[in-house]
Image (cartoon, rainbow, N blue to C red):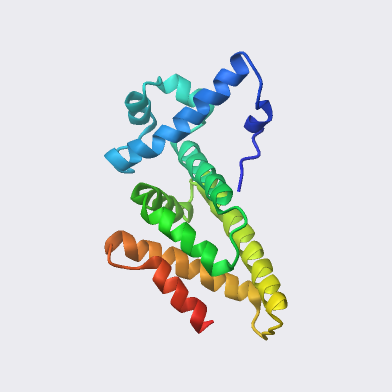
Length: 198
């Protein structure tokens, strides 16, 4: 998923706009490092600003709140993950690649899981909106990919593929939570088992 805030429209632009886009990207790139070193609770806007050498006012110029900044970090990582996957074929192959990438960045998994939990509470509308949109898109994309894979293989199923997509997402996110608590949990391996079961 990508952001619709128009920041990408200035690619190749010069002057203050280009510098602003670059600075915003630097903030996003460095925020996850702050989360990794200080934890979510220690990653206030002020703490993030101090750690990366940006004033609180400058952070507020780019992001209206800590929640908005952290959600944007997740959006950026989603976009980077999608670019890295490219034309990787197969739903479960793609999920395995994403799982392996996520395992290499525990702070990203922690950030995702923490914001997901917070999104169900009132007052976290930015996170709620992000996750609602993300899940709707993921369900739709997964169901379409599953339909395409079945059609290409000549197989048929009576299962509701939208529900299967929901099940896959639930398994992936649940496995990530288990992995945060026990690093012996094999996310990609368990997803391969789910593929055989399905």
